[in-house]
Length: 262
Image 1 (tube, helix red, strand yellow):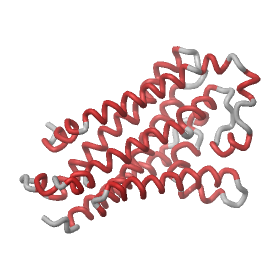
Image 2 (tube, one colour):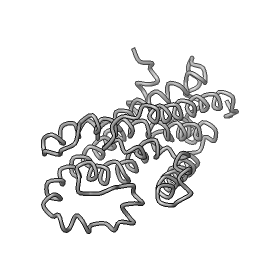
Image 3 (tube, helix red, strand yellow):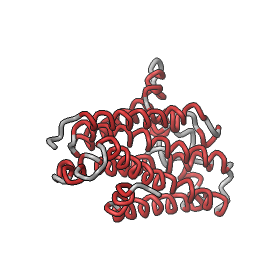
Image 4 (cartoon, one colour):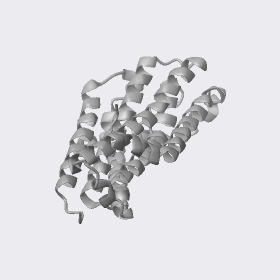
Protein backbone atom coordinates (compact mmCIF):
# COMPACT_ATOMS: atom_id res chain seq x y z
CA UNK A 1 0.00 0.00 0.00
CA UNK A 2 1.24 3.49 -0.83
CA UNK A 3 2.41 5.70 2.04
CA UNK A 4 -0.23 8.06 3.38
CA UNK A 5 1.81 11.14 2.45
CA UNK A 6 1.93 10.06 -1.20
CA UNK A 7 -1.83 9.61 -1.32
CA UNK A 8 -2.38 12.94 0.46
CA UNK A 9 -0.11 14.73 -2.02
CA UNK A 10 -2.10 13.31 -4.92
CA UNK A 11 -5.37 14.40 -3.31
CA UNK A 12 -4.09 17.90 -2.63
CA UNK A 13 -2.84 18.29 -6.21
CA UNK A 14 -5.70 16.48 -7.96
CA UNK A 15 -7.11 19.58 -9.65
CA UNK A 16 -3.70 20.64 -10.97
CA UNK A 17 -2.92 17.10 -12.13
CA UNK A 18 -6.26 16.83 -13.91
CA UNK A 19 -5.74 20.18 -15.62
CA UNK A 20 -2.21 19.37 -16.79
CA UNK A 21 -3.21 15.90 -18.00
CA UNK A 22 -6.15 17.30 -19.93
CA UNK A 23 -4.04 20.03 -21.49
CA UNK A 24 -1.27 17.65 -22.59
CA UNK A 25 -3.83 15.21 -24.00
CA UNK A 26 -5.66 17.93 -25.93
CA UNK A 27 -2.41 19.34 -27.30
CA UNK A 28 -1.23 15.93 -28.52
CA UNK A 29 -4.54 14.91 -30.07
CA UNK A 30 -5.18 18.21 -31.85
CA UNK A 31 -1.71 18.68 -33.32
CA UNK A 32 -1.35 15.06 -34.43
CA UNK A 33 -4.80 15.04 -36.01
CA UNK A 34 -3.81 18.02 -38.17
CA UNK A 35 -1.36 15.81 -40.07
CA UNK A 36 -3.87 14.76 -42.74
CA UNK A 37 -4.73 18.41 -43.52
CA UNK A 38 -1.06 19.29 -43.44
CA UNK A 39 -0.34 16.54 -45.96
CA UNK A 40 -2.82 18.09 -48.38
CA UNK A 41 -0.87 21.34 -48.74
CA UNK A 42 2.55 20.29 -49.99
CA UNK A 43 3.62 23.70 -51.27
CA UNK A 44 2.53 25.42 -48.08
CA UNK A 45 4.32 22.79 -46.01
CA UNK A 46 7.56 23.20 -47.82
CA UNK A 47 7.67 26.94 -47.18
CA UNK A 48 5.97 26.93 -43.78
CA UNK A 49 9.25 27.48 -41.94
CA UNK A 50 12.57 28.78 -43.25
CA UNK A 51 15.43 26.30 -43.33
CA UNK A 52 17.29 28.21 -40.65
CA UNK A 53 14.38 27.78 -38.27
CA UNK A 54 14.17 24.07 -39.07
CA UNK A 55 17.88 23.72 -38.34
CA UNK A 56 17.48 25.58 -35.04
CA UNK A 57 14.64 23.27 -34.01
CA UNK A 58 16.62 20.23 -35.13
CA UNK A 59 14.01 19.21 -37.71
CA UNK A 60 15.24 17.64 -40.93
CA UNK A 61 11.92 18.20 -42.68
CA UNK A 62 8.22 18.61 -42.00
CA UNK A 63 7.08 16.44 -44.88
CA UNK A 64 7.64 13.02 -43.34
CA UNK A 65 5.53 11.67 -40.47
CA UNK A 66 8.62 11.58 -38.23
CA UNK A 67 9.51 15.15 -39.14
CA UNK A 68 5.97 16.33 -38.49
CA UNK A 69 5.79 14.65 -35.07
CA UNK A 70 9.16 16.04 -34.13
CA UNK A 71 8.16 19.53 -35.20
CA UNK A 72 4.79 19.55 -33.45
CA UNK A 73 5.07 17.22 -30.44
CA UNK A 74 8.70 16.53 -29.55
CA UNK A 75 10.75 19.54 -30.60
CA UNK A 76 9.59 22.64 -28.73
CA UNK A 77 5.98 23.04 -27.58
CA UNK A 78 5.52 19.49 -26.28
CA UNK A 79 8.66 19.46 -24.12
CA UNK A 80 7.93 23.03 -22.99
CA UNK A 81 4.45 22.02 -21.84
CA UNK A 82 5.51 18.98 -19.84
CA UNK A 83 8.54 20.76 -18.38
CA UNK A 84 6.31 23.58 -17.17
CA UNK A 85 4.21 20.93 -15.49
CA UNK A 86 7.28 19.25 -13.98
CA UNK A 87 8.74 22.46 -12.58
CA UNK A 88 5.39 23.61 -11.20
CA UNK A 89 4.65 20.32 -9.46
CA UNK A 90 8.20 19.97 -8.16
CA UNK A 91 7.86 23.42 -6.60
CA UNK A 92 4.88 22.09 -4.61
CA UNK A 93 6.85 19.28 -2.94
CA UNK A 94 9.03 21.24 -0.51
CA UNK A 95 8.95 24.93 -1.39
CA UNK A 96 5.19 25.47 -1.29
CA UNK A 97 4.48 24.05 2.18
CA UNK A 98 7.58 25.78 3.54
CA UNK A 99 6.55 29.17 2.17
CA UNK A 100 2.92 28.69 3.21
CA UNK A 101 3.94 27.87 6.78
CA UNK A 102 2.65 24.32 6.73
CA UNK A 103 5.99 22.52 6.84
CA UNK A 104 6.17 22.45 10.63
CA UNK A 105 2.77 20.76 10.82
CA UNK A 106 3.74 18.18 8.21
CA UNK A 107 7.00 17.34 9.94
CA UNK A 108 5.19 16.97 13.26
CA UNK A 109 3.94 13.60 12.00
CA UNK A 110 5.91 10.47 12.95
CA UNK A 111 8.07 10.50 9.83
CA UNK A 112 11.69 11.50 9.37
CA UNK A 113 12.69 14.43 7.21
CA UNK A 114 14.29 12.12 4.67
CA UNK A 115 11.18 9.94 4.49
CA UNK A 116 9.01 13.03 4.12
CA UNK A 117 11.14 14.32 1.25
CA UNK A 118 11.24 10.94 -0.49
CA UNK A 119 7.48 10.48 -0.26
CA UNK A 120 6.83 13.96 -1.62
CA UNK A 121 9.29 13.31 -4.45
CA UNK A 122 7.69 9.94 -5.24
CA UNK A 123 4.23 11.47 -5.32
CA UNK A 124 5.29 14.23 -7.70
CA UNK A 125 7.47 11.92 -9.81
CA UNK A 126 4.79 9.29 -10.31
CA UNK A 127 2.22 11.93 -11.24
CA UNK A 128 4.65 13.53 -13.69
CA UNK A 129 5.41 10.15 -15.23
CA UNK A 130 1.74 9.63 -15.96
CA UNK A 131 1.32 13.09 -17.47
CA UNK A 132 4.51 12.89 -19.57
CA UNK A 133 3.44 9.45 -20.84
CA UNK A 134 0.15 10.79 -22.22
CA UNK A 135 1.60 11.88 -25.61
CA UNK A 136 3.10 8.45 -26.17
CA UNK A 137 -0.09 6.64 -25.22
CA UNK A 138 -2.24 8.79 -27.48
CA UNK A 139 0.23 8.58 -30.38
CA UNK A 140 0.11 4.80 -30.22
CA UNK A 141 -3.60 5.13 -31.03
CA UNK A 142 -3.63 8.16 -33.33
CA UNK A 143 -0.61 7.33 -35.52
CA UNK A 144 -2.02 4.11 -37.02
CA UNK A 145 -5.55 5.51 -36.99
CA UNK A 146 -4.71 8.42 -39.31
CA UNK A 147 -2.25 6.38 -41.37
CA UNK A 148 1.08 7.97 -40.42
CA UNK A 149 3.88 5.83 -41.86
CA UNK A 150 6.22 5.62 -38.89
CA UNK A 151 7.20 2.60 -36.76
CA UNK A 152 5.42 2.62 -33.43
CA UNK A 153 8.64 1.46 -31.78
CA UNK A 154 10.25 4.76 -32.83
CA UNK A 155 7.29 6.68 -31.45
CA UNK A 156 7.66 4.75 -28.20
CA UNK A 157 11.38 5.60 -28.09
CA UNK A 158 10.72 9.32 -28.47
CA UNK A 159 7.93 9.16 -25.90
CA UNK A 160 10.19 7.39 -23.41
CA UNK A 161 12.75 10.12 -23.98
CA UNK A 162 10.17 12.75 -23.13
CA UNK A 163 9.41 11.00 -19.84
CA UNK A 164 13.12 10.73 -19.05
CA UNK A 165 13.62 14.42 -19.88
CA UNK A 166 10.85 15.32 -17.44
CA UNK A 167 12.48 13.19 -14.74
CA UNK A 168 15.82 14.95 -15.21
CA UNK A 169 14.44 18.47 -14.86
CA UNK A 170 11.99 17.47 -12.12
CA UNK A 171 14.99 16.23 -10.14
CA UNK A 172 16.76 19.55 -10.60
CA UNK A 173 13.61 21.46 -9.57
CA UNK A 174 13.21 19.26 -6.49
CA UNK A 175 16.84 19.88 -5.51
CA UNK A 176 16.45 23.65 -5.84
CA UNK A 177 13.26 23.59 -3.78
CA UNK A 178 14.85 21.40 -1.11
CA UNK A 179 17.87 23.69 -0.91
CA UNK A 180 16.07 27.05 -0.89
CA UNK A 181 12.48 26.46 0.19
CA UNK A 182 11.44 29.15 -2.31
CA UNK A 183 9.02 28.58 -5.20
CA UNK A 184 10.41 31.57 -7.06
CA UNK A 185 13.87 30.02 -6.95
CA UNK A 186 12.54 26.72 -8.27
CA UNK A 187 10.72 28.39 -11.15
CA UNK A 188 13.49 30.85 -11.97
CA UNK A 189 16.55 28.62 -11.67
CA UNK A 190 15.08 25.47 -13.22
CA UNK A 191 13.30 27.40 -15.93
CA UNK A 192 16.49 29.27 -16.76
CA UNK A 193 18.47 26.03 -16.91
CA UNK A 194 15.85 24.50 -19.22
CA UNK A 195 16.08 27.44 -21.63
CA UNK A 196 19.88 27.39 -21.53
CA UNK A 197 19.91 23.63 -22.15
CA UNK A 198 17.57 23.96 -25.12
CA UNK A 199 19.65 26.76 -26.61
CA UNK A 200 22.87 24.80 -26.10
CA UNK A 201 21.44 21.82 -27.97
CA UNK A 202 20.05 23.99 -30.78
CA UNK A 203 23.13 26.17 -31.26
CA UNK A 204 25.51 23.24 -30.86
CA UNK A 205 23.78 21.52 -33.75
CA UNK A 206 24.03 24.54 -36.02
CA UNK A 207 27.50 26.02 -35.51
CA UNK A 208 30.72 24.34 -36.55
CA UNK A 209 33.09 23.86 -33.65
CA UNK A 210 30.31 24.04 -31.08
CA UNK A 211 28.93 20.51 -31.41
CA UNK A 212 30.45 19.52 -28.07
CA UNK A 213 28.05 21.90 -26.30
CA UNK A 214 25.14 19.57 -27.11
CA UNK A 215 26.55 16.91 -24.79
CA UNK A 216 25.97 19.29 -21.87
CA UNK A 217 22.26 19.53 -22.65
CA UNK A 218 19.60 17.03 -21.53
CA UNK A 219 17.73 17.87 -24.72
CA UNK A 220 20.48 16.24 -26.76
CA UNK A 221 19.99 12.95 -24.92
CA UNK A 222 16.24 13.26 -25.46
CA UNK A 223 15.88 14.28 -29.11
CA UNK A 224 19.40 14.79 -30.43
CA UNK A 225 19.64 11.10 -31.30
CA UNK A 226 16.58 11.50 -33.57
CA UNK A 227 14.63 8.57 -32.07
CA UNK A 228 11.68 9.09 -34.43
CA UNK A 229 14.00 8.01 -37.26
CA UNK A 230 16.58 5.86 -35.47
CA UNK A 231 14.65 4.23 -32.62
CA UNK A 232 15.88 3.42 -29.14
CA UNK A 233 19.09 4.74 -27.56
CA UNK A 234 19.27 3.19 -24.06
CA UNK A 235 22.50 4.91 -23.01
CA UNK A 236 21.05 8.38 -23.61
CA UNK A 237 17.83 7.53 -21.81
CA UNK A 238 19.78 6.12 -18.88
CA UNK A 239 21.79 9.35 -18.67
CA UNK A 240 18.59 11.37 -18.21
CA UNK A 241 17.22 8.92 -15.65
CA UNK A 242 20.46 9.03 -13.67
CA UNK A 243 20.45 12.83 -13.72
CA UNK A 244 16.96 12.81 -12.23
CA UNK A 245 17.88 10.18 -9.65
CA UNK A 246 21.08 11.93 -8.55
CA UNK A 247 19.49 15.36 -8.21
CA UNK A 248 16.49 13.96 -6.35
CA UNK A 249 18.73 12.08 -3.93
CA UNK A 250 20.82 15.21 -3.43
CA UNK A 251 17.63 17.13 -2.72
CA UNK A 252 16.61 14.67 -0.01
CA UNK A 253 20.05 14.92 1.61
CA UNK A 254 20.08 18.73 1.49
CA UNK A 255 16.57 18.99 2.93
CA UNK A 256 17.39 16.50 5.70
CA UNK A 257 20.33 18.64 6.80
CA UNK A 258 18.95 22.12 6.27
CA UNK A 259 17.64 24.21 9.14
CA UNK A 260 14.04 25.18 8.41
CA UNK A 261 13.25 26.45 11.86
CA UNK A 262 11.54 23.41 13.37
